[in-house]
Length: 425
Image 1 (tube, rainbow, N blue to C red):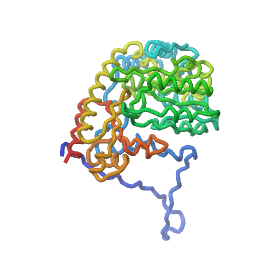
Image 2: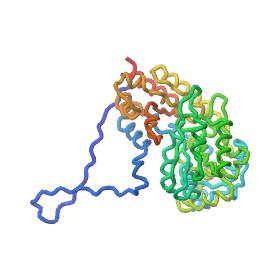
Image 3: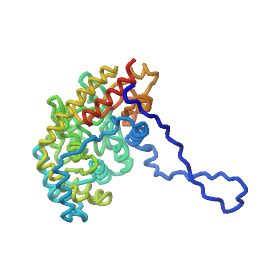
Image 4: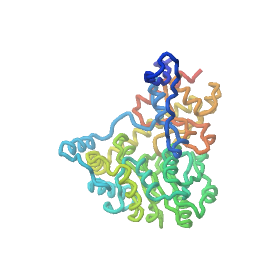
């Protein structure tokens, strides 16, 4: 066994009971109060990322579960943020974001997405893309509206629908000969007179699918036909492979005035903890986004906005270097998983590999993705994500497992060594 993992069983929670003030000689059982959780959040529980990272930490496993790099982003951005702190840029930033960052985002959007926008009226800086999604839902969707989601989905999507009091409708992304895709007929039938918005994510987490012009055009045509807004999560916009490029649905004819484009600094520049994101939308949609944003976080830390602007302006070459690194970690991990018996779907974009695990779990006497992802940290010293957590219909994802390759090569190599020791006869 290579680098064996020390197994520690989690201890049960202990409630500290206060001393009884009356009848101390009579044994009593105190029942701790039940948690009070708003009904809208009850179905979601704790995020799968927290759960799997907790298992990784408990078993000292290599964490290929949560999608954060184990290395830092460009030094020039960090230095710019440090200088901003030392220069006393430490009070509230404007609600919409510092002008310097909004101008940098506008230039970035024009240069890489062919999407010009007005930094004053069409860009809102948010606390990561996750807050951009929440503000967009809360600011533009009314209770009772229908919103179309593709499953699997980033888990905050479903919670945002619930917070807005909307009704979700689902279209399933399924494996195909060229990776993953969706059924155009299924999507077409999901639109109706109650549809307010459709949320797309391209490049897609977790499948790695990058929507092509035909898919984007179909969605655009349906949006225009039914007067629907497109919410487009494009956080992996620069992380694409094999000559495939990302296109924003906002650039499709007739879509600019009915699209909210959401992105962030974290994935592109490996600074996920900075939580600097943005929403780009025409002024009439931006008004709704800002109406919600002002009561969610109001503003994003100013020094980090200044650091973000520096990277968008001056660290563009480092994104190309990052993509070259991910091409290598993607290839090495994908080939190793294939050799171990997984059926690997190499992603077109983002930084996750989806793999069919059923040949492996059959050998292990396991069944579902949850079985495998619970087993791996303890017995192999590697953590992964069970993708069924990202489906409204979990059975559609139970045959897959998701591995993140946004790591140093030595981390990938260690994970592969551990998986080989645990999974090979």
